[in-house]
Structure formats: C-alpha cells, structure tokens
Length: 320
Image 1 (tube, rainbow, N blue to C red):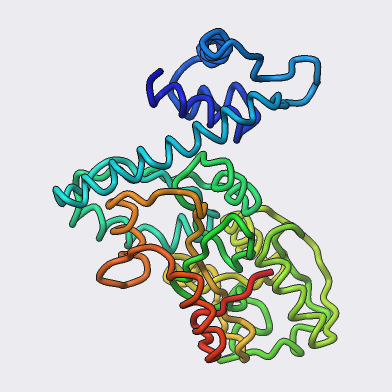
Image 2: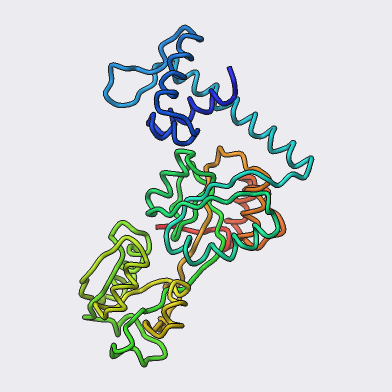
C-alpha cells in the first residue's frame, strides 16, 4: 500500500466527504470509493459503517485511521527533515484566509517571499472566518490567516501583526472633517457592519456595548469590499481595518478617521493544526509573516507556561 493511499483515506476520514477527499487529492469521487473498497479487501475488514446515514468508521476503521495518521506524520516529518538537510525550499503552500487579510495585508508578504523563494507555489483561498478554521482543522490547507484568533485545543496560533480599525465615512458625512472620533460620538449613526458571525463584527459589537452606545444597523455584509461600496454611496458609516481603505482614500471616495482608544487594535494570526508537520517552505513563510529570521514551530509547553507566569503579553494572545 502506497503513502498516497493512506493520505486519501485520512483525508476522507477528516473531511467526512468523498467529494472533498477527491478534490484534495486531484482524483475523482469514484476513485476514492474504489480506494476504500480496496483497503477493506486488503485488510479483510469493514472500515466504514454503511448502515449509518452520516459518515462513521467501524472500530477496525478507527484503528486503521489512527495507524495511518501516525505513519503519515512520520513520513511527512522524514521528508521535511531531508529537505532541511539538503536546504531545499520548494513545494506548494496552501493558505485559507479571510478577505480583508488576503486582499490587503497578505500581497506584499507573498511578493517578498516568492522573490526570495521562487520555487515555492503559494495558493490562496478567500473564505469566511468560520470556513478558514474548518479548512485548517480538516487538513484541507496548510495554514489559515484570521483576525481575532479563537483558541482551540487542536490549533497552534502564531500572532503576526496588529492593524487598526478606523471609521469609514462618505466625504459629505458630518464626521468627515474630524481628525479623530470617539465611540460615544457614533451614537445614533447609521451603521454598515459585517455579518454577525464574523469576528470583527463581534469585536465592534463588544466595543459599542462596553461604551453603552446604541447605533442604527442598516446593512450587513460578509466581506470588506461590499462594506466599502455601501459607504461609498453614503448608505452609512463603518468600522473597518485601516489598510483596506488605502485605495479608496487615495481616490478621495472615502474618508478614514482614526478612532481613539486601544480597543480598536485588531490582532491577526496564523493558525495551523498542531499535528501538522511544517515543511521548510511553510517555516520560511511563517518567518516572513512574523518578521523573524526563522520559525521552528511552537515553544515547548513548559516554556510557554513559564512565559505566561511572567506575564509576557506578547505570548498570551486571547481570541473571541
């Protein structure tokens, strides 16, 4: 049995989807089904309980998955170590990211990285925040980029930058001439926001609640570009990352007004599964994002515990 067969099986188990497993491995859904039957014949055991409507492994299937996952981890670690010994930086890095980071924060990092490592192919998918976590947890991608990272037992979180939320207003809005604005001055304003399940929306809602400020929600969207278009037609105001407005401010179609207060800083982070073996290319890419000379993975648990005990805020990020 080949390593590729074990990977297909593990992708099937982790995604609970024949179509997704097929897509991840560049094969047909029928080929995934044939692979499952071939494994059952080879091991003389039923791997998947077909009497259930939902995807469910038998006890033999679970045992096989645990063993296959361990073998794949060892194989990937070996490949990574051999590449490091030969100083090979190549391959593909598959990234899932929210729109605001992928469209406005990420491009200069990718340009710098690919200039230094032209043999690496960087693939980027733009997704809603919840789907970025799903992609990472299901091993559909190598890493994700999110705002306000959520702590999860299965994830490593690597903070890489902070940006600021600013007030976006139409040039004819009464607040457009202001140098800065306080959250209290937004009371009663028509507000254009992100959908309620998006972390930046949750953060801004918390800011308004803490200040006991009532605003008038008029529109909700799932991506930054649509929010900006609504501001451009003067449908309302919005709180958005400053970097996402650079083009509109340059064209004079939106005014970006700084908000006073530390709470308007938005943390951004890299997330990846704790079980994932980082290839040399992935380590170099994380190092590029974080501004480090190198990245060797998370610190041992004992070291992280010591840092928290000393109150190092840079190592104690919290999420929504």
